[in-house]
Length: 261
Image (cartoon, rainbow, N blue to C red):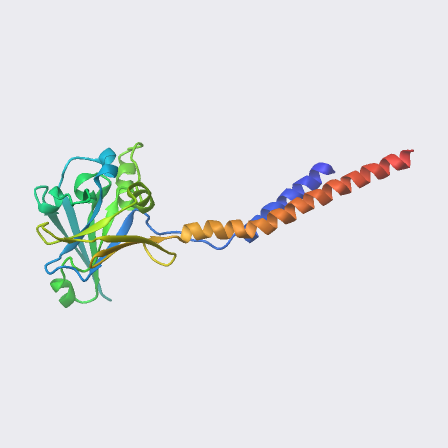
């Protein structure tokens, strides 16, 4: 009898938890961030992310080329076409050797945490497709992006470290953006930095003149806080239910004992 009642209480508790949980779907790749820039020096083609050298030492991987990939996709009613253009900014370029007065260096050129800068262009006409170049907009892809992680998974690399945007932010804490031209010459560097949170966007580094802003998607964080907020009244109700159940059992036991006496 007791075990049956306890099972029903547990089942009721599970159902209450499920009903308390907000609807949630998560399909965003946390391993990359969009890169955008405005009010940049003349000749700017890309931006690269700089981090404090004293925080980067543990992850220093020499100096290597910066890989740029431009993927153009043409979608029309009757056809689909895709082109991929690979570019490289060499390890002898200015950005690869650059150290600013505050000791910031290129995250892309000196660590293995960044796998490359990838630009995607989605077009709906041959005319725009043929004239497009890699200024369309691009992302910085970290080792935790789904694409690179899948490659390592397929190779059976169990020791592969997945770095996503949150890992990068929590580790390096401060960032600058370097405005660079097609050959990797540094045309300017941002001076101010701030972090903002927004639940409705992809992680994004936004360079605007002298200021760099990292916008963090906090949808997951808000989800857990919302879940906790909804579970508090449930927890209080469940504890009250247990107390009532215990008092009920004690009342039955006392009644049985009184009837025997």
